[in-house]
Image 1 (cartoon, rainbow over the protein chains, first blue to last red):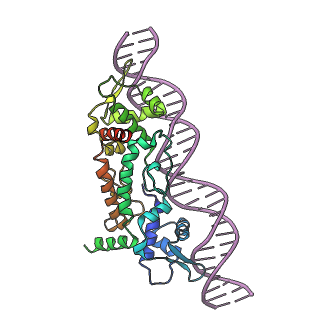
Image 2 (cartoon, protein in one colour):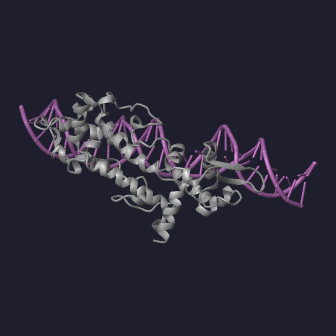
Image 3 (cartoon, rainbow over the protein chains, first blue to last red):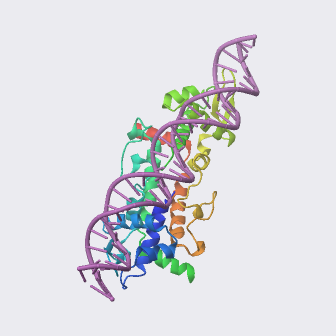
Length: 144
Length: 144
DNA sequence: TTAATAACCGACTAAAATAGTTTACTCTAT
DNA sequence: ATAGAGTAAACTATTTTAGTCGGTTATTAA
């Protein structure tokens, strides 16, 4: 399951993606708009900022804005920051690999073999879908 | 992430799939072979039995065996018993649908839209892969 | 230069999910 | 009868998730 953290992250990035040419937006405003607990959102935005996705400015008139083109922010990158691995088993993870506790013979494990395929299928979609795509999908759903 | 429960379930079914023409195998034997805590495995096998995948027999000489062809037991069915939904968001689940807490406009949600695609890609693999496939994949990995 | 605004940061807490364990019971073969 | 083996519910411990709390630092405007 996708964590709330990840959902909140995507929602915040979508809002900021729609705010590209305006002055930075405050955490409190994003939190109100999407009904996200403010202090929790602070943590999340900070993680995204430290990962280089967001620009932030302190003080009056400060806030957050995207640090790059929404077309270049892909779901896979966000999820790796907020949830960690994409694969459903650690031994099939590209960026967060580690051995499964239970596993004795990793190289000949049929479960791993299948879940490498699942990972690849998931990864294909998540690494092709950007914040800009989410925004345009929502437009298409509103005006079919 | 795949739960240990699901991994144990698959491993147990694989063992029983290799034991098709022999007398039923005891929980304790499966537990020892795969180093699964016995009492935990009991719960899991019971769930699989109640779902119709296993035949069980009590008393001396009793144990478990598969109730159907390993070619007809698919990962998707096992996972739905042990872990529940396949989709990463409840609103995209076919068998365990419910609304996301956070979501206000489900029909126009871009996140849902993407994760329906992810679900379909995952589902395709998991509903095509059987216990027999896992066994033959392991054979191929051992003898390339 | 002080007050207000808003992000930054670390530590703490509550609730839920996961991974078991305990205890007792039921059925079956010998 | 009794020993072997599955059935069942309830309980417990650990880990993860989803927050909260209290304060600090940087920036702007009065």
